[in-house]
Image (tube, rainbow, N blue to C red; front, side, top):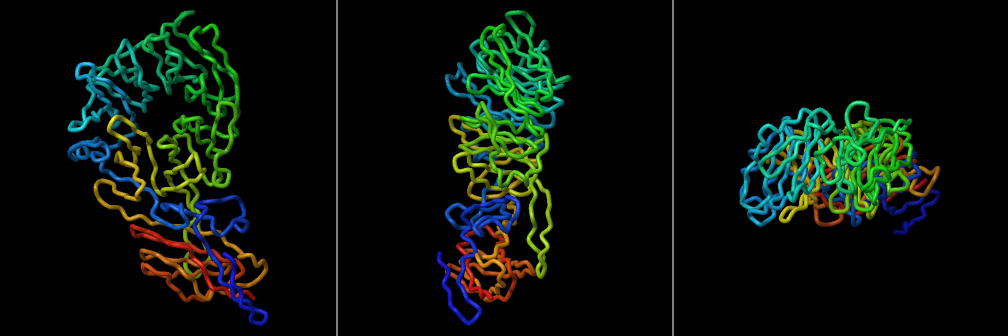
Length: 491
């Protein structure tokens, strides 16, 4: 949009676009170098299509998302869910799928059958885990089983409604199936990858042809997670990644080291996402293609505050992760003070477009994409609820609607007139709901309450400075804000 100029002596009046919300959140050093269409701060909103709308949210109505016939499942879910998996099972007796949701909560293992009409949350008797377990599917002796292990508990193999223990297995911090062996990082010194006997993940007797281990004694740190990817086994370590070529004959196993990280890698954030692996480190969000690592969001990563307990998941071509983020608050009216606060965030990263959306205040304990015969949902273990991710912007926890503050703010800009003073006379905006438009300069700020109306509104103001920023604050559902432009006198 070209600025329309009216010459009045030494001063000029222009109609200037302030933002079209096109770029979402961008942050790379000096905000004065960023375009106005970029969001310096941007959370709980969506910016696709050039309008500001409600971002995604969570809801607690699990039964509806799992295609159950009533909502009793929501009332009987255990509290403090900390891990969730999909157990892929075929029932040979009933000759049908019998997939189940497996949950770790209150140090116990529960499961929920995912077939229509079945509404039970069932406790596996005796299957307690004192520390957070890892889980994986496997077909053992012609049966679909689900294997659970942890750093402090004996390996447990679930078969339908019963389970068996594998007391000879080491205590494991992570595991992966690769070429019919189970590979694991273990508790204790965390310097070795263990592997089971071929075709039997419950047999850990060390022999030249059966189970064994490979030690890695170098400066890349503890072995934290194993992932089978692109015909190799990759070991994610505290400060790097190693690759293990591991086929049937263990005498042919070999190890090479690919990457040394400048920061610590969060093990639970390491997720296979189609043709790449994504993970968080103290350097930000990273992508690994099997050969090299690149920073996925260089313009945003410096605002992530990553810890070793952060987690991630993959669903519908997007990587979801939970960490902490440096937010800037809206300025106090009449000042230019924008306090920085580090808060939990659930983030959605689109692998195709490279776009990111942030949901402020959500600290997930586990993230799981579930795709079964009649279930397709992203589950988030959050606070004391097992919540369902919702793209429509619904935000309901414990069946009660929760108000969300949605915020978008542009960087300060000279609008293409460096060194010139500007006075905003009025601005123009269309919004479906009540919002607050915040104009800020390098000298002061002013809040403007704008009522929802299906037409472009003219809002009079009077604020001056050499740099100008615009922000939008909303607490109502159905946010839909169009482009914002302003009449500005440049002098």
